[in-house]
Each structure stands twice: as structure tokens, then as C-alpha cells.
Length: 190
Length: 298
Image (cartoon, rainbow over all chains, first blue to last red; front, side, top):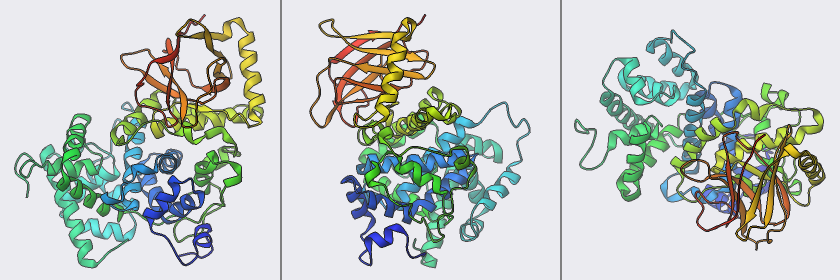
């Protein structure tokens, strides 16, 4: 981790947890917001960039996520998971909404095949994530990539893959649980 | 393993997984929202899904312009140096978007916290709905369209509108009474008011006294409040569109009864009203309106 970022200088060696930082944001601490951005800005950005069709939209999403945290920090409930997971989830929701509203139904009269699209989405992941996803059974991998990275609703994913919508949903769940299990086995913690 | 309905017992576990990926349609999403309000087990499972998904992120530093935009609403005195996000040092603001926005947002009071707030607790779905609404009301392209350099604040305002609206349904931004932008916006509003066609609406209080005007010219729309009472700390005026089945927030107007606030006036809006709300705004007006009036367009 790069030394000398603003947050680290501000907080020194006695780094507060994310929950304390969010509480400080509620007290209008700009330093706390800066430290949160330093810790999680890249994760938020990577999700927004992956899902949004343009960098411009991704920037908007990123900004909105941190603006929301700044103005409504109480929306984050530390009892319901980590700040990073919450920020990433907020970014994803906003990115999907932005991507869907930008999607022009007239454009792309010949959409890429599901296979091509899945490969493109896998390529957008970094190496660790791609390796984890690639270990899943292919239907689980395809459903997660088309939904999570492609931003497709389950119905669209079902059409793209030629499987029932219920299969898409159950595959997503099994895939997520398999990913979790694999991460726990590897002792991944981020 | 879930049964053929995608449930385990009463728990819609398959829909919950799709929910975590934002892949449900609206009706399904609302049903899961409803279930989550009373099901601890599903909240825990959802949190687990979110943690899993958060491990699929990467550590690429975001463009520096984003941090500048996040802090644009913080008073200049409190501005931070851009923090370095992730392990890589923050790059120079060289993204295309930054290049298009040489002065993305002036660090003034243009984007006050109270303008960036709008809804109350537990508004995840509502906020996402607001994204769609806002994109239709204020197309992103419009928000990004700068005008002449002398009107930079307008471009900034437009950008704030999107940010503020998406943050909580408020589509407005208050101009601080201590900012030197006041002269700017005040004279624009005056000029608009001088043009007889510029006054689109007069909002009267409950006794029929005019307390607010809506003026517009090619530079934008403004609410000019005069004669309303100043509100105590923690309360603020909120502007509503009453066109349509339910009131829709157009933004917060601040707590001062004499004030000028720029806002976006979608062309379909014909009825306006002002309520008193908590500073953060309300999803729906809870009290009587302080003033109301109709929009006339020549």
C-alpha cells in the first residue's frame, strides 16, 4: 500500500475501523470520508467501470456512491456486513440502473452471442477474480457474469443462454455459494 | 438446495441471490425487499452474497476527477487533498471526462449537503428508482453540457442536480447566502423576472399572499422566495411538483424565507408547491403546503 496518502497521514498508525470512520462522516469529518475513499474507492470504481458502458457514467456512479455516504452515512448498517461490500453493492445497483437507462433497444441489432459476451465479461475481471469464476460450473459462471457484469435481468440471461429463468436464479445462488466456499477454503479476506 | 420454486421453506433464496446481483425485475425486487424487512436469515444470506461479490473487485485507482467531484460540495475550508485510493498512486486528472470538465465543480457552496439529501431511511429501492427518474428528467448529456465560461456555475449546477437527485430524489441545489455566486444567480433571476414571459408561476401562501416566484430564461429556472419565514436550524423548505398522481420532490430550498434557488423545471410540470421539511428532505410531504401555485407557459 502506498505510503503518504492523505488518510494515512491523517490517521497515523492508529487506524480506526470502517465503522468508526462512517460514524465520523456522520459528524461531518471530511478526513474520515477521505480515508474511506482511499480504502475503498478503487473497489467502487472497478465495479462501476465494469458495468457502465462509458467511463463517464462510471465516474458519475462512483461520485454518487460517495456523495450518498457523505450525505446519508446512517444508511450503512455495520451489523449487515462490511463497508466495502455495502459500497460495492451500492455502486453495482447504480451502475446497473445507469447501464439499463443508456441501453438503446434499437442499437446492436445483432448482439454478440452469449459465449462472446461471457468471455468479454470474464476478461473485465482481474486475474484472481477470473480464476475464481472459471472454477465454477459453466452455467453458474455464465449466469453470474451475464447478470453481474453484463447487467442483464434474469429473464434476459435466460434467453441468452437458452435455459429457464428459474435455472438462472438457482445457478446464481449456487455459484455465489461455491465462490464463497472457495474463498473460505483459500482464506481470502479483503 | 432450493426446491423448484427457488425457495427453502418460506425463504426466497434464489431470488435473493439474483437480488444481490441486481438482476430481478421490479415486482420481484419489491417482494424480496418486503421479505428482508422481517427475515434475519435472509438478510444474513444477502450480506454474505455481497461480501462474496466485493471480493471480485480490483485495485485500479479511480480517476482523480471523481474525488474532486465528491468534495465539490464541501466548504472550501474543509477541502481535502485527493487521497490515494488503493495501492496505486492516484493518477493525474487525465481522463476524457476530466478533460471535458476543466473546472469540474467549483469548490463553493453549490452542492450543499442538504441539496444532496432527500429521502429518509431504508430507501435502497427508492433511490434506485430515483436513478431512472432522474435520467429521464435530466438527461446526463444535458447535465454535462457546459455553457460559456462565464456560466461555469450552471454546468456545475447541472452536474450537482444529477448527483443530488440520484442521492435522494431531490432535484435542486441551494445557492448559499454567503457565496459570491449569489450576485450571479440573483442577477440572473432578476433579469429573468424582468422579462414578462420570464415569470412562470407565483406561489401564494395559505392566505393568498405571494411568497415565491418561479422565473426562467435560457439560463435556467429559479425559485425566488420572498416573505416566507426563516425556519429554525434543521428545517428547510422543499419544492414539489404536484403534477401527476403523487408529489415529486424538485429539491430543497434552504431554510431562509428570502432566497433564490436554481432548480430544474421539467417542461411537463404545471403545479408547484412548497412544504416545510427536515433539512434532509422528505420522500413525500407530510405537512400542509406553505405555498402553492400553477405554472403558466406562454
